[in-house]
Every structure is written in C-alpha cells, then in structure tokens.
Image (cartoon, rainbow over the protein chains, first blue to last red):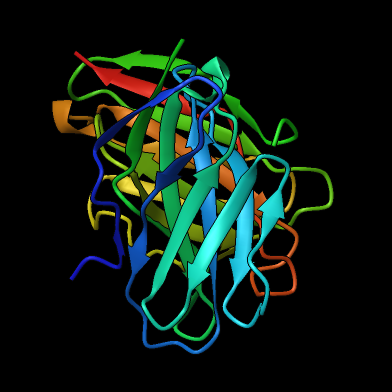
Length: 116
Length: 116
C-alpha cells in the first residue's frame, strides 16, 4: 500500500495566485513527521516545511503553509503568491518515528508550473 | 543543504563496470542516508548508516549494491556490474541524529548515474 499519495501529477497556477498541492498519508504510528521538499529542474532537493504529528498549529514558512488535517491524514502544501521560480517538482514525505524512524518515505511528486 | 557534498555529480558507466558514489555529510552529522530516484519517480530509501555501522539496509538491492561509512572519509555507495536499470539519480542525506530529536535530513545535490 502507498504510504504517501499525491494525486496531482501536474498542476498549473497563474503567477501571484495561491495554489494547494495535495498529500495524503497512511501510518499506524502516533508519532510521525510530514515534510515537503521542492526539486527544481537543476535536481537538488530543497526542504520547505515540516509538520509534527503532535503539533497543534499548522506549520508556516514564509509563503509556504501546511494544511494539516490529522483525522483525514492529509498534509496539503499551500503556496501563496506564486512566483515563476516556484515551478518545480514537489514531494510530500513522511518519517514514522515509531516503526521506521530512520528513513524518509516520499510520495510520487507533483509537477507545478507557474504561468506568467 | 549546501553542506552535504556528493561527487561526482554525473557518472557514466558501461554495463558491467563498477560505480562508486561518494557522500560527505554536513559538518557535525554522523548519520547518512542514501536514496535512489528513478526517472519520473520520487525518491526511494536505500540504506541508513552511522560511522562504521549499517543501521538499515532494507531498501538496498541484495546483489551488486553495497554501502559503507568509514570512521574517516566519506560514505561510499558502490554498485558492481552496473546494468541499464541502475541509471538514476542517487541522493545522499545527512542528519545529526536518527530520531525525532533532529527531524530534518539535509540532502546533497545528487549523483546522476547513466549506464550505457
């Protein structure tokens, strides 16, 4: 079974608008962490934002915010005021602190294209 | 993530040759993780190492692949007798600890292996 599901293979957004990238996850652990990474065409993996399963407030980092809905097991990434430089692949990922604390499990990714 | 060094950035090997990928973690980090990214896919965990120890190699193919992280020097991912299916981007990540005490893994720029 897929641990991380990203149902949007590709997304388009107009520059300066907000966009939501979907992510759902599957775990039986009570303690886990959720991450979003950005991978531009140059290939490097850039850490964007982190949400712990016990964090009561949604994480925010600048223009990035994580819409964490624990009961629905979703951790959507919201990018506000999109910029051309936001065009990239975006990966949702999870670490399960109880069962597999060491590895990061990645979703298949969403390709975001920002249109001028 | 600029602190994790990987070399070479690009590596071309003929079928049957050996590939050696090197990773120097961020200063002060003693935990190293290797991931493989096949074209159009997300990253898949391969192996987690600490100095002189393999902690989790559950994602590593049983044959031809090996990894080490010696007391001195970089971590090495070694692929013997490469085949075309080994063509991928190989990412190294490092962290201070392997548990929730330090949740973030910092990624290197990756090594792109092409098998001809």
